[in-house]
Length: 627
Image (cartoon, rainbow, N blue to C red; front, side):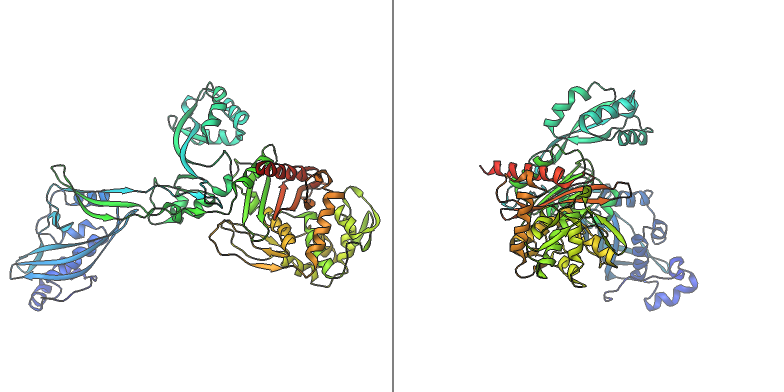
């Protein structure tokens, strides 16, 4: 009995079994022995080389190649390796070699099988008498192999209290059969008017599917209630059709859509990233937390390896025990999220609204618009924060000794580093208190005050508010950046949130929240995630900042929201682009009831006129839900 051996490559001499090589090999029990032929055969099997396998057979079955192809296809074998060769029995004419095959089955994993190779001696050569037993000890002629693979129910995303945010349901897929479309422009127009779809995108989808006129092209999926609203207009348009399909539903259409994400058939790109145990046709998370938490939510598939007898009997040879998905609890509060959605309901420009818990950094609500666009503006969009950044500058000023009643001049224009800076709409308030220039957002006053700060004071203050700090929200989010100012002009622009200063709406919500507790907390979306970085504001500054931010609402640029008890905030009108006059983003960051929040409208105009009313609707909806 020979000991265990590891399969190695054998040279051409063994493959061809040349007579000049055989006498010594047979006498010594090396290269020409049954174990050595087994090695060559199994190496050929591992690299899917039937031609080399046939070289080792006594007699080649007519369907030898086909049997191997059916075996691979039936089981979804993507790779095989062989190990543990043992010569079980040998006499002068017959030998049995036991081996262990480990076959990797697509989407399931490794299946280990111990089987036998039966050899006969033909003259001075050892050759394999092949039967289906080589595949598995129980296999016989006429049998075939198959498999079963199933995923268990996908686990749910939960809100902060543990209530379901995603449940199994049904949506209606609205699409078209290109060959039945009479007028592509009419289809695009109808979808635009009823569902807000971009006509160019609809036309592009129809064009890309023109070669397959009877293939259904899906444009958009809608909930049953939305389908009922649009069906009467869309159904008469030639070419438009509707299909029902299973889906994951949230509490309402569009509810935290970018954040929770969607589930669908795995794409080629996602399949490459996810790897084992996924395969084409699987339903997976395609965006948002559904994608980020895919492994946790999906679990792993269960499966069976089956031997299918000619009689129709199915023998289970092996079971893969799947694992159920695990629910993922978020920090989202349903009432706060619903209020955020209501506040943005009628906003037609790209926008975002984020709310965070002041004491923990937990994200309570996050909404982005438009819903039909993949960009998650609230988390990944980075924009100049404009005058909302004056909260940071004010912290540095208060820490340096400036008081809310310190007198400061607010002229129309100042020069810094040979660059002229003007107030918005050429405003000038003369000599005023620091509280007043903050409330009215006087750029020129802030530039003059910031010029008195120490060299790194503004940069240090930005860091205390998380600028330049890396953190993990639970979804991709680049945070905020404050590059060190290069000169006086750069410093002046940075002091009012322009120049190279950039931040996400999410991050600006944490800036407001930090004023409440005096500690900046990195934001997080997952309830069970570890708390991220934090930083403490300068001693004595939080109370002063709250005083200033309250003045914005009672007597400043957010006075339209003065009826909202306890609201503090800061407006922002951030310039961008190269147009003259510059286009502006509209901002408002606020603090109320232990919650910091940010409202952002891309290219929206003036913060006090555009973002503040949205903030008011948000808080009013939240108040109404609490009653």
